[in-house]
Image 1: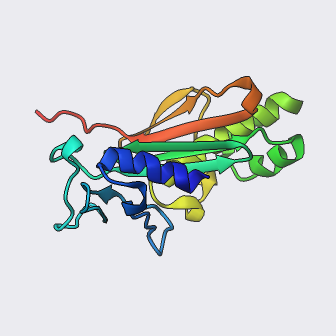
Image 2: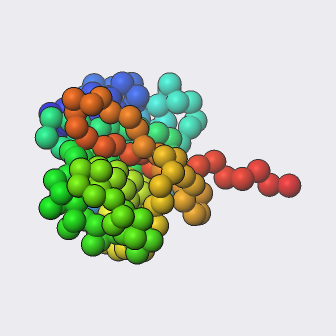
Length: 190
């Protein structure tokens, strides 16, 4: 279901049919490769492919980048013209939250360890999806140690080297936490 949704969203952005959208992942990192295209000429690339043709809707803009995450009954999909990552997780059980807590940055572990029960499980899940969104955006996945990524408690935060990460509100019935990370605009020069 998530792959079908992804192809339909990308096809709309690229001006082609869903079956023409190449969804290609980097063989080393597993990160999705950006796509460029117009009807009949859609390509996957690293952003450096000189033969890639930009979408007419996007003019001469950057290729479309995307990230997808899924959990039981929920699919999160984001597209952008810059590196981006998304993660969604069902609220972890208290036992699952304790396992994830051990994987987080020491400062986050200390902050979250003060909470108890369902409050801790919700806060750990929230922190975990923010870590996952960042490593997806960075295209490293969990090859980068989550314990080295300090998230903090703010709902939206800038995270070194031009990245932001933010919580996204979900409906209470979804019982899930969602976060998006994106490369921010570079600071103006001069």
